[in-house]
View 1 (cartoon, rainbow, N blue to C red):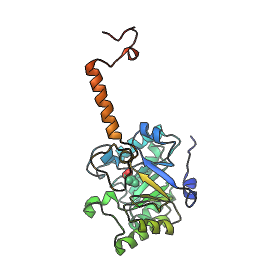
View 2 (cartoon, rainbow, N blue to C red):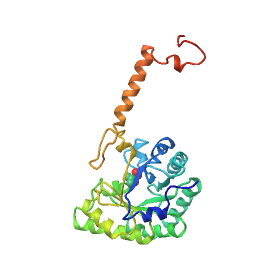
View 3 (cartoon, rainbow, N blue to C red):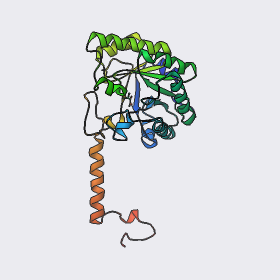
View 4 (cartoon, helix red, strand yellow):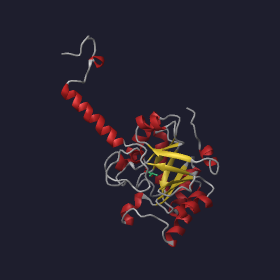
Length: 270
Ligand code: KIV
């Protein structure tokens, strides 16, 4: 199956077109998104958005493989990236073993790894072994417990310099693109300027090479909390609730099923 994007086309987008990425966790939604975006990320955000967990730390390799398979089935022509979950990249040997398992069991095109300079050697090891890697620096949700919360990076000089350093190290290690999450627009702009690979922002302002959003946030299905950086393009939760309420009402008042929803009889009456 020919893919609509490749590592080469994504890299060459830098400076010529903005890249769009959206998360997906299943075949159905992936099939709805695939024609509209450049890349689909099977993010470990599925721990929260799909499984209702409080953070992403409980997500396993097994879950990532299951959901990535589904996404690849729904969007066979899309460039699909599988997030490597917490604890799956502790050593370079473990990371390669897990990335190979993802490539063997799914049709993902790349993996995404959270982490800065401390992960550079590991990223190089994967790239040297034919695994395309997308980096992820700035606010890293897998570090939420060790960091004591989700903290925007780049507000002070130390974190500004650290994120720049981390991003450069991941580029040097061979990543084809990098996500920069939860940073000041000034820092995102500096990373975008310094790196020659595409920088995909989330909560990072407008001056990056592209954007990524979690599907359930941007389509308004996740109601309990809307981060400042999210724009809702649909009020999904409201629409779904209204539709299900209507269905319930029509079953109760006998309007559903009507004649056109009934097999082999001229009337819908029992
Ligand atoms: O897990 C995820 O969905 C992500 C994006 C927020 C970039 O890592």
